Image 1: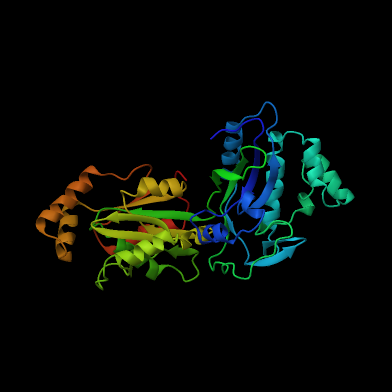
Image 2: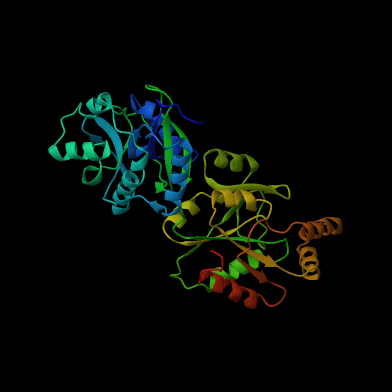
Length: 383
């Protein structure tokens, strides 16, 4: 999508559309708020300055986001602000103010001077002398110390309907900035580019062939980590019954899995060996809180996971073909032909992209577990 000379752009915070808060916004907006979409303003709408381009704006958004980390907001509440209704944090969050000020300054080079009509719109409400000065300097009166983070639910004079949906229980995570566009005057603003902020924590994506012992190593690490270690292990949801021997996953029916996927409750989801696998969306919160998050993933899904989480670190668990064959046979879940197919697939399917570390698991579990614990406690090479 490209713009015309009359297009306006804005830098907003907007929850991911598939998240609980994104779905809330789709049905909660009323009045004029629908034209602007569910968002919080970081840099108010502007036309592009002569000499700048749409492509440069998107590139600047990516560079800006890549230099900042995601964070969780305090619990949200519904409040009346002047003559409209919005969601606001229940307590102050200095990182919000810092992010908004940085956006105002960073994207100022793209803002064309406002027209007389645009200035008149900004002055529909009486402005203080300080707000007038901010309007003159930045094209918007509610920036810097006048900034109030909010996600509008209504336009001016529109009451918030009591039947509106309940607020999601999931925390609201500031994990991206989004460029919105008003294609022509009076048109609705639409999101055109979402630039993800860097994760505050580390995401270890543990992959390896069946029989390499991923589950055993992760279980050993859980048991031997200090209780106060800032590490969270994601529990997988699988459309397979628990057998009491392999991983302690959450067993779901296919219908239950698909319903949760449709509600945006998975950060990752894939199909393998006739079953559906999912990693809960709560890992985004854990990362935003600065935790090291460990997920047991699929090698085939790795390219998709990298697109969603570009900073993930791959830990490859391996074992010799002889050990893999012995372990697979010992599980008693597959025929000799199926085991042979698995081993063939292991030979011809290396994990995509950079591998941060490898844990060879041919010998004693304690040795492999200790190697994995070292990975949890230090930064890996290449990250």
